[in-house]
Image 1 (cartoon, rainbow, N blue to C red):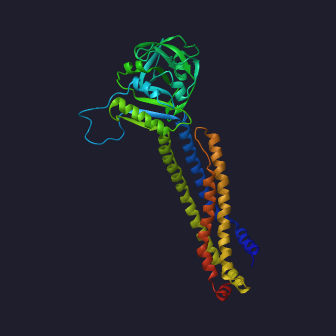
Image 2 (cartoon, rainbow, N blue to C red):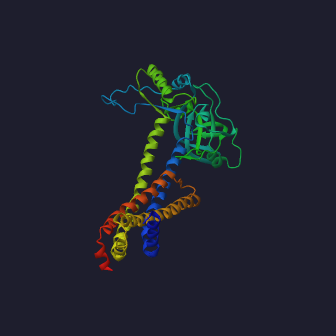
Length: 399
């Protein structure tokens, strides 16, 4: 028998037992559907988190006071960590390839206007924050270039704070009270949305020096650097490290490039995607066991047919190929159905629940279909070997 005849026999056997074949393929369909849906959710979350994380740009370096890793005796007795100052931010700005630097102080305080009050995030920043963080001003302007040591009491509102305190009125030129101090509103930021659970629109921006006084701090919480697109982040970080060591006398700070953050985040999210895919793979394994069971039953039921094929000249290899072919056909058909249901289900989830990110990774889709065929092949080997080893005379006698 040639390949066409073997394929015809395999397909004929599959369609002759429609209900049994349907139930067998259904196990693989469920497995592939689970793999595609779960990996689509995992990949969607992966892309969503990375997009949220990089919405401030990709050429950023963050510098925070204190070392993230330490050695030696505890610093609880004697602390040699110098505060991160506005002078440090100005010095870092002069590094070649650095476009801008933003000193950052963050806290929480009530913001009042008239009879309305809202407790919200307060960010003490510099005038270059919009260019570094990729913010845009919707109304008015951002904080101007003032003397960093005695800046004017000016404030810029997030869009939600504006809506809550002023409603339809324009806030420009109005006076608000932040933590007991009066500030004049000079601008309103465009809506930025949320980032990893933080509502960036529910915030007020004031000069960093005034935020240090408001929250009774001596040190900046962070300094963010924006460097040129063609520059090396590692080289800029190295120059920043050398500069701060010369100013502080020791490395009492932590520098984190965005490449490092994205690398760690990407590795964690890749593991997440693989983990959810592995959970779906368990369903595939169950489907493979179903194919194995059905094929063993098929061999027992078709003993006479096997004997007849052997009697008219079919060899063991041909019998082996026929039963393996049946198993592969069942797994492949079930896999294709699973792909269609899985990708369609992922798309419907994305449409029905826009907040739930989904993205079907086609590399996983192809891998899942190949895996279904391999499972069918593996599940069909044992019954096929058993069928090929049947004695033709005994098989005909069973008929």
